[in-house]
Image 1: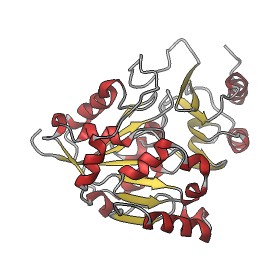
Image 2: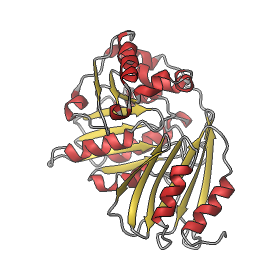
Image 3: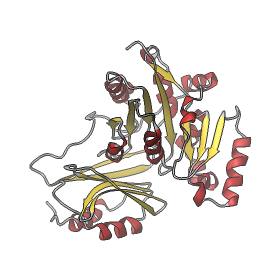
Length: 332
């Protein structure tokens, strides 16, 4: 490759709507362009790649925690694989618990100088979280916002006038000032935002950022696969005060849609994501703040994947028993 690929990092904390935003961007992309998306997830089983499968982009997943750990090996492998396919644009979605400064540092290194044209980093934030001490005291939450030149206040339709005032006051206090900001709903981000130039001061901040890894990257497999002899597998991860558990279940096992929706509505977890085969078809479930959104998918022959993330260690075995019952599987 000789041409640099326009590249954006779209960051933001858990449940802020990064995947929905990228899906909307893919819907609006020029028909003659081929885009690539590198998706990083805290959980081990990889959900976002399946959610984006209908988006018409080249997708590469790096599940299992922050992709810039272990000397950047998982991230570099994913980026290199996508660059070989010569995309017209590259979007990188770090995990909601990721370290954007380290990702920026890698993308602006000599390794990618000839191949990556890094544009402005975009951070999504739910304005309500700017009044939540749990978020304001979280280093990654603050790092994500500090590293971005563009701030998008998402889910404005769920915010109060006070939430909007807090968002605007927060923007006023930022030094250096953000280049661009906008309040949106459902991740409806205009394509033009992707072409905002990166500010050099952001690069300097990234170069001096420090990254402390507390993830286990002993296994760098890109995505866990379901062995043919097993009806399901379960994988757990933990780091930075969060715990995750994910399940992959054979596509021949169908969930009861109504009962699964009720379960996700009642589940008291920080984040739930799933692409699931049900008795009504294949659906993507997205749960944040105990609000469930559902989109029908056109996937066929794809196994069900469910991921739950919380700041407390949950009774995974009890949850597994319920999930297996809802899809007609006895515990194995």
